[in-house]
Image (tube, rainbow, N blue to C red; front, side, top):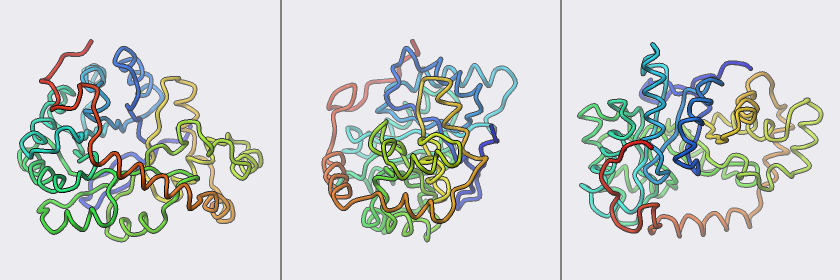
Length: 299
């Protein structure tokens, strides 16, 4: 397996181009998943308050660091959920709880998880204080459209370094990616395989995979890498972790990339827009509809 390369953010800081995502990993399975990911070679870990497993992830990362490793070898992200975006101090409190649960002293990247209308700018400004205090090295945004970003930038004093939204062969919003990349924003993508959806069933990707001697999943992930995206992948199976990371020893041709680009439909873009409208107005968290509970210990 080729080493996972790094991308350089506008600030000059480096982040691994492949990240291990924590979403939908049960708390009881999180420590083993992180341990296995570290053993495979993952060094970028994408977490969030909404994932409800940061204490467990942090405990395993701390154990790894205790064996002689240092924080500069890893990159850790957390995010603030919509239930804590209604009040700027609640957003700051939520971020501080995540940082405390992870137990690493600081995070490399802190994000607003969804651009809640009328709330996200004030929340972001409150999170800027954590960069000034050294609890977060950089700020980012998640699921922001160009319009959300422009609204934010009328007030932000610490510009976001990263934006994350869903990108896969069935949902390729080229205009958005071009917009953010032209402004020096590092683009990350989640659901690069649609969690086992139609991207893995596409004949175009399957035929390319057969020609290259790779899996369809690897072709889809490689497509995103060649868009200069940071790719968030997730699996609790070590063999799948290896498969997902084995995408840096081959390249797609320009014709391959163009063919995969063509899989996105207008219907898919409309469906994604509906999901965006629903999520950013507020979604119940694992702890309910109110603010998150106080810091908890790992199980």
